[in-house]
Image (cartoon, rainbow, N blue to C red; front, side, top):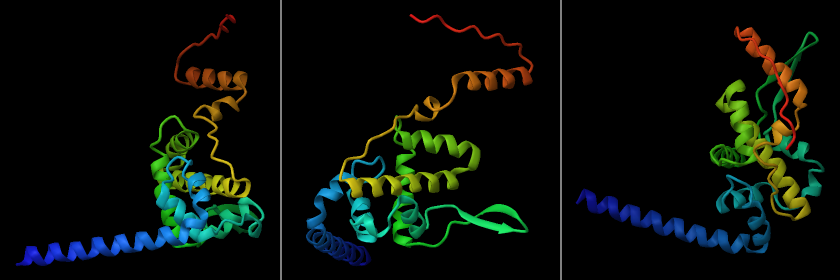
Length: 195
C-alpha cells in the first residue's frame, strides 16, 4: 500500500515535469537559435542555455559590456577597501537561479578535458581552491554567453594550452630553473635545435 502510494506520487511528479518541460519548449521556441549557440559552450547543456536566456534575455545592449553583465549577475569578485588597503570580498548577490545554473555548468566544464575552461579550472583550483575556481569558470561562461548572444556566433574554444602560449618562454624557463635550483638540483638548459 505504501509502495503503491509512493509510485503514484512519482508518476504524478513525472507528468508534472513533462507538462512544465512542454510549456518551456513553447515559450523558448522563438529563441531556439540562441539556445543552440549557447549549447556550444563546454558544460552548458540545453536546460542551462534556456535558463541563461530566461534570466538575462537575448538583448546584450542593455548590459553594454560583459563586465557589467557579470556584475549584475553577481559572478565577479567583490572589492573591499579599508584604510587604503584593498582586499577581495565575497561575490555580490545576483540571480540565485542563474548562479546555480552557471555553477553547475562550471563544474561540468571543469571536467571537460582538452578545453580552455578545463585548463582554467585546473590552473585556479590548485592555487585558489575549488570554490573560487568554479566561480571563475562560471564568470568565463557568462562572458562567453554575452559574446555569443551579442554576435550570434558559436563558442570558439581557445584551447587547453592557451595559458602556456601567452607566457614568455624564456622567462618561464628561467622561473622553472630557479625552482629546481631551490629544490637542490643543478640545472643547465640547452635549447633544442629546430628541426
